[in-house]
Length: 181
Image 1: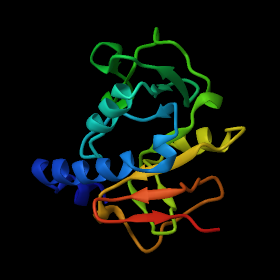
Image 2: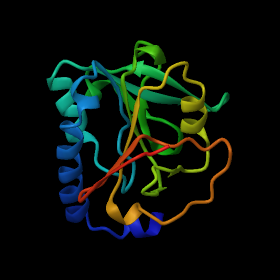
Image 3: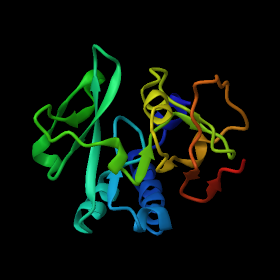
Image 4: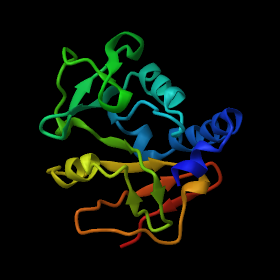
């Protein structure tokens, strides 16, 4: 799946990301959120830059994850200026500097969840570290969990375990898939 995603040209990724962002910005869950957890694009992932710019322009609080290498957990940090407050973290992924204010997970209304592959049933396959699965599984209350992905990342089925967490919605450049119970 990563090879398929990597094979997309930069222009195709940008075009698809623009369409996905437009879909994300009109979601009721996003529009009503005051605190949004996002992630910074790594490699050929959905390009989050325009999404992050929009939420900051609309006065929403931006929370980004920081991977704590030793404990293998995500800590949340508020970021007001991504250009100045990010550094290279584990695997070279840009993340908040350690001196960024810590944010409480209970404040987050909307989570943009990354992943490698998804199904139309909103099942998610991450990168294998379990960081997001542990984070989501440990939340006291569940905010809107939304994945943004290119349509080529959708597959009929995924090898899932008990610890794998589903999202509420998968948004692609051409469609949206809502989780049903």
